[in-house]
Structures are given as structure tokens and as C-alpha cells.
Amino acid sequence: MNKGKDNKPHIGIYGRRNVGKSSFINALTGTDTAIISDIAGTTTDPVKKSIEIFGIGPAILVDTAGIDDTGELGKKRIRKTQETIAHIDLAIVLISNNIFDSFELTLIQKFDYYKVDYVIIHNKEDVEKLSNNTLNKIKQHTKAPIETCSVLESSNIAEVIELLKISTPQNAYQKTSLLGNIIGKNDIVMLITPVDSEAPEGRMILPQAMAIRDVLDNNAVNIVLKETEVEAFFSKNDIKPNLVITDSQAFNYVSEIIPRNIPLTGFSVLFAHIRGPFEDYVKGAEKISKLNDGDKILILESCVHQVSCEDIGRFKLPNWIRNFSGKKLEFDVAAGLSEIKNPITDYSLVIQCGGCMITKKQLISRLKPALDAEIAVTNYGIAIAYMNGILERAIEPFMINESVIHE
Image (tube, rainbow, N blue to C red; front, side, top):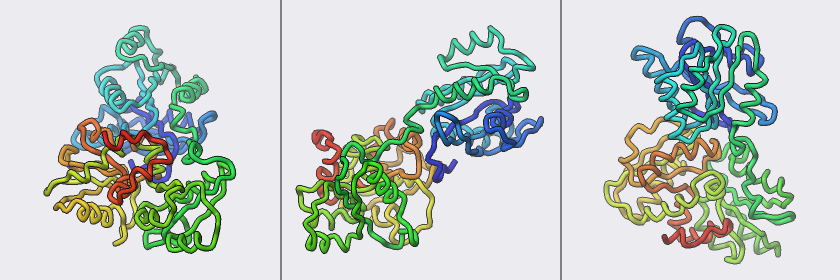
């Protein structure tokens, strides 16, 4: 499931074949957005659908294949369904006909592993009501909220939507400011944005655009320029920025120009702080100095894009790490939210991009196998700052305890 630019809360719909998942989605959206059929297995691969939920706002519903699918193709569909669990913010387990057994319990175990909140909804109440025996059985295994409905008769849909509102984690949909805790009203923020072959024609890349908007939202002032104009700016102006944010690729050059008394960080470091396991990233950067010949490094990109010779994740960063470490290293790249083909234990280090194209939940879930295996993880910007000897300066604006770096 490639989330792309759908940076909204993701709500997954799970259940056996023919429990009414597609009808349930149609009832929530109020439109015939999902194909309905009496034939089991109509939904094959996970499909995303946009919805507006009052009190939450725009959200993405993820329609999945039946968890009881059969045959070789069915096993592949189940695997695809299970893969979505790592990337959602809330799960709905849809059951019907008082059937709650091993398939549902397997789902719940995976929800617990990825720390995904979930609710259980008994559908088709017009055919068979939820029994006390089934209710008690569910309560033996989970404390998740339980609701009933009949989507074909549109009964209890309002109650279901209210349950989604109170069950969706607030941090999945509440806007979090990139800079709100480090800049104030009327502060001057300098954004240094190199323009190379990776920059989209006539547009800013997403992290830069988001930072510009966030500065404005905080009633501060933007100064936007290329790295080649920074030196001239300071020679011709007495303006002293309250904060400088640079593309990580220009860290080395920019850090020599920006006076040490002006706070300096990078776009990727900003996203590391707001979306990633920040302290793990900082600790993990030190692993770059401890790599050995033959070590494998995994590069995680959150988006799928056309690759150029100036691609930071596939070319520049690996070359910088090889030169810094002096070791013969191997690199693998996994783009978007695609499956990581090799066992995570094959890698000595995992390096995640800023993650501007995915949710915090998706990013944390993406890194969870590495963290669980105690494999060092870090971030593009933090890794680059570390190799340039300016990591402490790059994280200073976030007032992290310096002991984290040396621990």
C-alpha cells in the first residue's frame, strides 16, 4: 500500500469474506464507492477510498481482502491485507453471524504488535443479532470498543461514525507544527533550498513548501534563497535570522557561512524531530563510525520518484558514507511502503528519509522491526550532519540533552 500524498489518518477495514466490508464502506461514505457482490472474495488487493469524517476531517478508508481467503492466490491476498496493518492509524474488525474465532484473534495480535487501536463491529444485525455468548467471547480477548450495525438498513451508522471519531488517535489527524516550539511571532527564518535535477520544475519540494507554510502559520517571516546566495545575503544585509534551515546536502557549506550564534538545522532533521524516533536517530548516527567491510545498509525512502544521478538516497548518501567510513559497504533501497525483501537482521544500519510523504504511524511502524532487533536507525539529515561534524549544532534548536549523542 503506497500511501503517496494521502497524509491523512488511515482507517483499515478487516474481516472475513462476505461480512459486508464493501457495503460498510459505502454506508460510511454515502456513495457506491466499493463493489458489492454476494460472491466471496470480490475485494482482492487493498483499496483506498477518501472520506470526510466530521470531527476528524479528511481520512482514508482502506478496504482489504477477506482474512479467511483460500488457495495460493488467497494466501497472497491475506499477506497483502496483513501488510496494511503496519500503516494504519485505526482498524475496524467487521464480523457477522456471531463468528469470532482464530482469524479475528490473529488480526488482534498483529494490531497489538504494531500498537494499532481498533474497534469491533458486528454487522448484519438485521440477519442475526450479536449474542451474549459472542459478546462475552470477544471481551475475554480484548477491551476494544464493540458496536453493532446493519449497513444495508443503515441502522446504527451514526453510532459507528461517532465510535470512529472517539477511537481514532488524535495525533493521526491533528496538525502538528514543524516549528511551533522553536520559533515565535515575527521571528525571521531563513530557508536554504538548493535547486538541482531533483527539484521539481517550477515548484518547491514538499518539505520546503511545508516549512514555508509553517513559518507563516506561526506568524513569522520567511527568507528563501539558494545556498549559492547565502554568502552574498549576509554581506549585503544586517538581518540576523532567528533560525536557519538548510537542505541537508548543503550542511557542510552552509555551516561555515552561518555564524555560530545563529541556530542552524536541516529540513530532514525537522521531520526527524516531528515524526521519527528522534533520540534513536541521534544515537544511531554514531554507527556510521563503527561500520565494517561487508556491512549492509538499508535506505528507506518514503516516496516513489524518478531516480537521477543526484538522488540523495541512492547515490549521494551511500557515497558519502563510504568515503567517511573508508569501508566497503553494500546498500539496499526500499521505496514507498514496499516490502523489505531481505530479513532486517541482514543490516547493520537503517537510514530513513525525512518521511514528509507518510504519516508518523507509518514511519514508526516501518522502523519497528529494526528497533525491535536493536539495529541502529538514523535519518538522512542527522546522518549527514554527523558526518560533517555538526550534529550537535543541527539538533540544538530542539534542546535535546547532549548526553543522548554520547550515550
